[in-house]
Every structure is written in C-alpha cells, then in structure tokens.
Image (cartoon, rainbow, N blue to C red; front, top):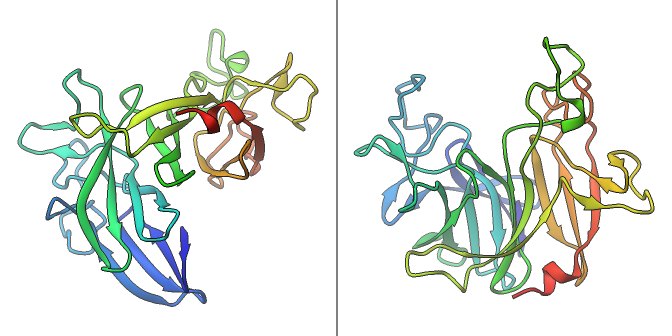
Length: 273
C-alpha cells in the first residue's frame, strides 16, 4: 500500500491488480497487470473461468503469488509492484529461472501520472528455489529493501526428535532475510544488484531488548509471514510479521502468533553501495 497525493495505491496478489482508491477507501480505478504488453493473470483473475487443477498451471501467475510487495519511487512518479513467486512458462513447463537454474521474480514499473505500465521490469533472483518475498520499499531514488524468506517457521531448538509431537517443529525456519537492492545497478540480463542483507534469524541482542525471541544474546524472527519492512531513519529499519490468523505459530507450536514489530539498528546496511 502506497500513499501518493490524494490517492492510496494497493498491490493485489490474487488478480494480480493495482488498485487506486481515495483517502476514504472508495475505489477509483483497477489496473490489470501487463508485462511487455502481455497480460499476467492468476487463477483468481476475474476473467479466468477454469479452476486451477493441482499440478497444472494455465496462467503465468500462480495462485496467491501476485503482488506481495509494492514500492513507490521517492518522487511519487512510479510504483514498483513485486511478484511473490516466479512466472510459469507454459511452453517449457517450468518456472522462470536464470541460466544456473535459480528462480527469479519480477519487479514491474507502473507510471502513476499515465496510469499505465511502462513496459520496463527488473529481475530479482532468489537465493534458494522456493523462497518468496514479503515486502518491498524504497530507501532512496535507486535502492530499496526486500524481505526474502522460506516457507518454514519455528526455531531449530524446537525441532522434533523421534516421533512427531504436537509441541515441536518437524522442519524449522532456515532463511529469513532483509536484502538491500539497487534498481540502478542491474546486470546485462536485467537482474538487480543485491548489496547486502540482515539475517533475521541471527540478530545481536546483547542487552536483551526484545521481550521474547532472544537466547544467548541472539534474537530470532522465525515467522512464515514476515511481510513488513521500511526505513525509519538513516540508521534504523522496522520489520514486522503478519500473524496470519489463525495459521502462523512461529514462536510456539500450535499457539497463535502475535504481531511483532522490531526496530533494527543497521547503519552499515543502509550506507552500503
């Protein structure tokens, strides 16, 4: 969600669409997604009548893998919706990957004044296939922050041993990061540059500032749905989880998560180029 002038802009993950409303929430316009002139639709798009069949992909966007994050340029001229998952290539029967087999996601560009897609896009390569993103916001004219995460939750110390028990995790979270990226420094294939990252499973908390989640001076943020990141000032960022009521239980097995907001001091990351 982005505020530009008197409008509020929403990136939707199910169409996927970009939606514009006024400040009261009245819908003013809905924009269908296009990439290089072709429509991008998920099985939940209003014009798609065939239900999704497990294992079959009749649309390039997988269900619930539309715009999970949407940044805005600092001057308010452009929106940068980011798809949560890779696109499906029907001709090749596979998800989009680079030459090394790594999946990548698309960052699209939308011109606010023209109310249309520019046709320009960027590629964001995930560190591990199957990872997805949780949020995207710009720091300045060229750089931004993206949450990249796996689909697991819980901590290694709570892993089950032996028979499965209701009070443990069969597979704990392994990958939860906030990356700083550059839209300006793309390579010849259009991939954005990853400048650095914060490991959300390994945050120093020597003074025990966190109310929960710290052990032996290390704080961990082991949620499935880490979906909020933004800059606070030149040295701090804020990160938060969606507790996904009632399905997220990252702190304690079978116990509904709270919403947690964490303030992180990361001057080196914010200054890195």
